Image (cartoon, rainbow, N blue to C red):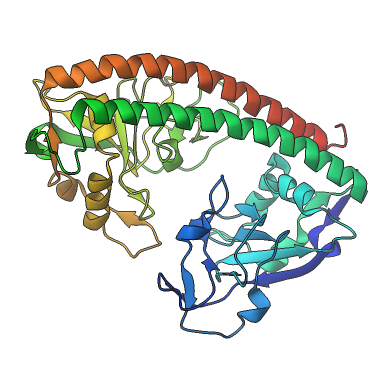
Length: 395
């Protein structure tokens, strides 16, 4: 299958609008890097474009466009499948519009999530504090491009596999909803605390937080080598050890940086919506390490709380809002909360015996969730195999 540079099938490659974002409906919707997620875009939360009209007309999105992150999550892309009329994209995104008689957006979008694409992005990214890809480098990326009909057939196969992956994720989400319902039934709405549980400061039941360090990337696929977690290992509120990267083979990892079963991990730095996201470690490979942006709770003795209870407590809307308020950093960018500020949080704490009853029920659900996750992992493996075969011309 012939590999073709993006420039040969691109109709347009553009940078976005430089403008302020506003929650007031004073202009068109303006898509930002932080609005792009694996599941797509929730347009109801996307802000409006304020302060300028320059270039807005030329930067309107339409179905079939593909947008790329220039910085931050460099190379992350999204196929626009739907968008409000007149919606534009912000300056830290690049918009690729294809020649429809040459390239199918669905096919090209799938390639832009494949290992072959990411290898090119890694070699094309500029160095520095924050890596980035510009339009000229994007145009040079090579895409295996069969005839248009074949592109559409491959895209349909990968779409079907992707839909199956989505169903597995939805099943896990439904299980989370059941857990939340049990939590609410046992403890009430802890945002208003109608049952009058004792309100305590985090410092009363947490002694400290342990963290790791930032480690340079090392060679991948080395059996048994240490891997350091990414922040994304906890941002879904479920522990994902696969969200990790290898470290150099010469790195001597301190024992206190090793992640252990039973840990409760929290993201001290993230976007406004995700700072303070946490996940409970039910099980984990022995070679995974804490990074500098994740904390491990060190509980006071004798133990006054159950980690699984605290995990759910910290996902409550009131607590999430308070963490966001205590964190520093501008809205829409990376925010950070200090240990000193986190210790100031005050939360309702039911009796330990009541927490233990909840944990017993939660563990039953975790066992079921583990089965679902195994099934999801199998589907992910199938999808990866299909992806590799598709872009080698073997599908």
